[in-house]
Image 1 (spheres, rainbow, N blue to C red):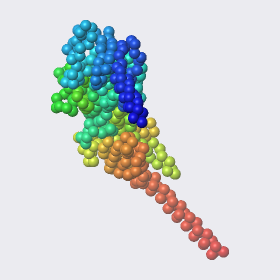
Image 2: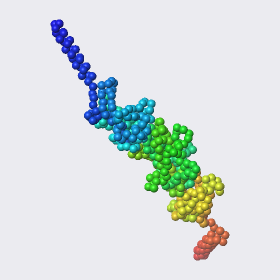
Image 3: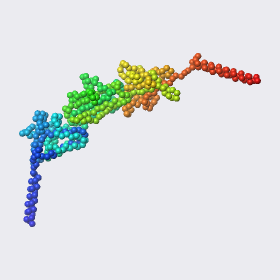
Length: 492
């Protein structure tokens, strides 16, 4: 029995020694002799955004024996040699006998990453993948030291003890929102008169790590960019929410009026400025426009703005606003037999902003046939609106408000209106005009103005008295004829 116990103890001891000897066996090798087994997974990718992976250092050889992670020998890749020998990377890495000696620390890694990202503009990525809105794996990578063009940049070491690395995309997709600046605040719709000016306000949200960011703005034909302050000032004011001062002019460029009509202006933000932003930043872009005479009546003038960003100039959301100018269609008519309407040409009106129709409140227009376009010009304008083409005429280019349409001259034989017609023009929920009058509080398509002809009255010496005399004479003759017949009858 004792012999059996001794044999068992010897066998147990032998097994323990054998087990320990197999566990501490180290792995050694070189990159050329090792299979590709590394991967980088990028979480929370932005859809359609390109992610570029650059191999900075080659893993030359390794030994996993020293605790805790082993030792690894690196060499600078050919693409990155200029960066580390003559460029901005000199202070972060030196070489000893052709091998990397790193001076990258926790305190300078962010600075190093920014400089490395700037250098990538000069070289080709080792691998490129496209974001899909979720996690994207990049597999079958050599062991080595990598830079991922994501967030403010990510540095990843792929080794035998750390072959699979996961990083989180912290960038947010840049976006922009467009508004119209009114006294009541920022709005998406407004209404104006021809010649009015107003302000646009775009808010650009720049995500951390954004690159190649360009803001585009496209005005419709009825609006003209005001450039009054370009001489000695800025037509477009650009300010970051981080401070009261505008963004320095050296940090962006502005280009006007694309020859292909794609944009009215574009603002290109320089990457040096974008890289200086430590977090998401809102940029306000403010500028003025003037409503010109080609503005459509009661149709939206849609202003569009959008961004492009990243190496592939990915397009962001498109934000729009709508601006309207209104008109008042008028129909001048008289009623014929059985209620039929007949348009009256040549009746004259004026439009006022004051209910008493004082001269100072009369509105002037440019005439084009039976269309009258609001104008602030002092020449080639009229304050007389004349019905034509079957009694119709159009008053165009007005903003919402209360107006008074006064008939100032009518046709011979017709009664002129005693009081002006109150016309209220409002902006409806869909942006278009809603027209009401003091005689019709329901929305109308046009203002209809009825004129009645005057009554025909008798006068002295006229046909009216002659007719009475003739009728009276006929009655006297008739009476005489009746009396004569009665006398003959009695005589018989």
